[in-house]
Image (cartoon, rainbow, N blue to C red; front, side):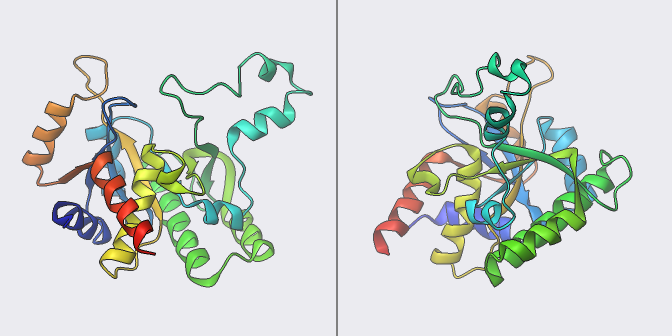
Amino acid sequence: MFEKLKRAIKALSEGKFIMVYDQDNREAEVDLVVLAEKVTSNHVYHLRHDAGGLICIAMANEISKAIELPFMLDIYNKISNIYSVFNHCSPDAAMPYGDKPSFSITINHINTYTGITDNDRALTISEFGKLGCEIINNGSNINKYKKVFGSNFRAPGHTHLLIAAKGLLAERKGHTELTVSLAVIGNKMLGLDITPCTVLCEMLDGTTGKALSLEKAKQYAKENNIAMINGKEITEAFEYIMRAQ
């Protein structure tokens, strides 16, 4: 059961790329995905060169809680009484596919220079992934991890942070939740130790100016020997695990 998904999760745990398609009636986009703590400058190169979208870190909700990271919408709402422009940006409006964005702040690691180079972004991403790993393994000591985060990262930066819904796929079915859920599935179904902190980037098509089609994405996956899975497969496995608890 779920053999294709298991192979993809195993590849993810080894620091390899996988590809995730959400669903036809949502974004209908494919993201190139890798574990945050495993990221190297070579990963960043392929994310920007082969995928081309926004390079983001997606984290489990409990990681964000440990360092008190807010959603960007909450920040906009908080400051709208000072900067009225945010009252006109419809910060509470859902995206066209129905969800509110999962965006939080942007960051650079403290040891980066501009923060945008492949080396700089790899450092930011991998170090945040390691912080996420420490939080998951050692508990969410807010006072401790706020200081650790504050002393190792600066904001704003060049890497976007995304916060998964607390209930993951039971609450929201975006790429943020889909990729973070892979860690939960892998840990419970395969006995792996995957930190629920991933990096994802939308795959775009320079010819059409649109998202890369599912057909072209499948061809890319085949040519590059990358496991490709979809939101339906991930959701079914996630629901199976939740029922078994």
